[in-house]
Image 1: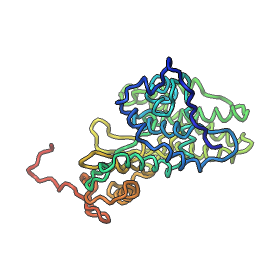
Image 2 (image 1 turned 180 degrees about the horizontal axis):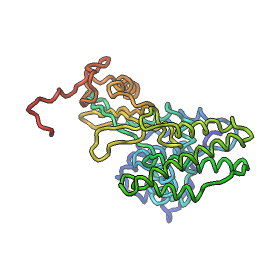
Image 3 (image 1 turned 135 degrees about the vertical axis):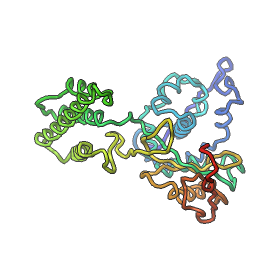
Image 4 (image 1 turned 180 degrees about the vertical axis):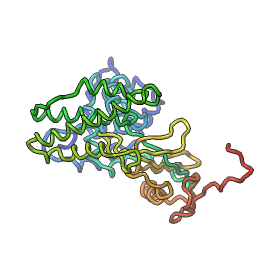
Length: 356
């Protein structure tokens, strides 16, 4: 059902609201006055039905997405911890009095993002660009790629195989299947045995433990395939587990996480972090004013130069203009011009140049 509006109870003179108590020069206070919240109400109300339980206020959900992005918070951190402690968050979200309870469940932010989709996220982004006025119309931009890391631990075969064992035991418990063994304590011990595998005295034991974990995971998958009443229901999960067990060191399209199977490994040449696990992201920044006018993630680890047409097209759509020049690094080798935008790239280093 369409979202309800935020109730503003009439306040007495003895109990002033948040507007009178907070600093009017604070950044979130000022930003809340500049955003046209009615625009999002009009755009996103079309995505709701006229029946069912009323949804959360539109301003609340949009403001939570903005706060999450500004302060780089997870859904749980924002909703369950920061919200109740920060009065400026509540005022920015449209409340006039201090709230003691959480605004919504953390999972509802995920549902809202899925409801508005990529187009809705771009509308919020486009509105944020327009707030800067002429500062967001700089004809000279800088473009660079980075890694948007996923929330996963450093992937190892032992961790993945242990998770497969736990997932298989969970499926059996859900379907009421009696497994020959759950390997709960065994798998924990084997994972501990794989630690510090590069040490000469532990290498043999670690490799043996790794092989046993893989054997146990494959054994449980085959047992589930024999005993499950409806194998097709869990076919996507089981095929994913098999792919993890079959992949080798040099395999392509490897799986690094069971809950984030789209994660891929990226090497950006950083000395402190050789490999990063997530997705490649491209950011367009105005050179003189420092306003972000384009941002895009890519499902595949494509070459940096191939990201230019896509991210420049998004910049034209959101900011309403084509940049004249785009300054990039040497990783974009091969592109000198994209449509009307001239690509400026450093020349090759001379022999007399040092490493710095």
